Length: 133
Image 1 (tube, rainbow, N blue to C red):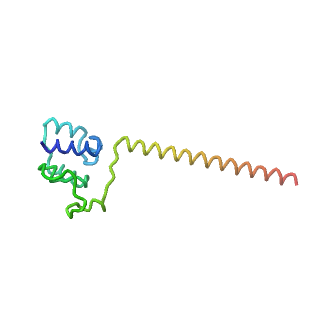
Image 2 (image 1 turned 60 degrees about the vertical axis):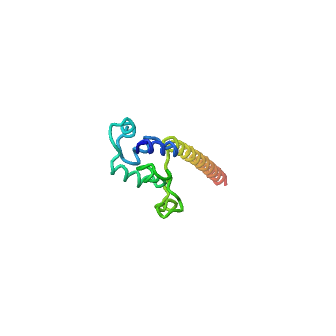
Image 3 (image 1 turned 45 degrees about the horizontal axis):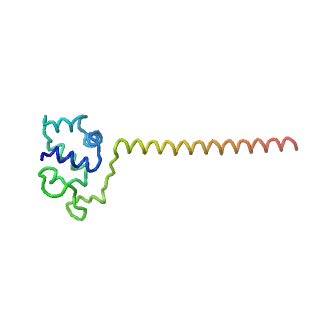
């Protein structure tokens, strides 16, 4: 199995899209497809980016196929995965988060508009009472 095949297997296991991977590692769109078709090789600079961005991926496994796919959390070689844990979002997860955030903000805005309307009505009522006296 080639490095690219192991990388694709890892991405599939983590449900990370090609687009997300390419953005995280700052490589061109279509990089993974090109590598998969055998029209290039994974260079040391890309391996370094993978190592820095995917902390739970065992780089030795990626390069050689030896050992486990994921870094042992208890291992000193684990690069302090738990302390430096990164969160990866797929495109769909990111869109869902943004949609939820927008809905929350819209609800908050509607509530504030209701409060303003109630306060204005209350103030208007006070003004009417003071004019009568």
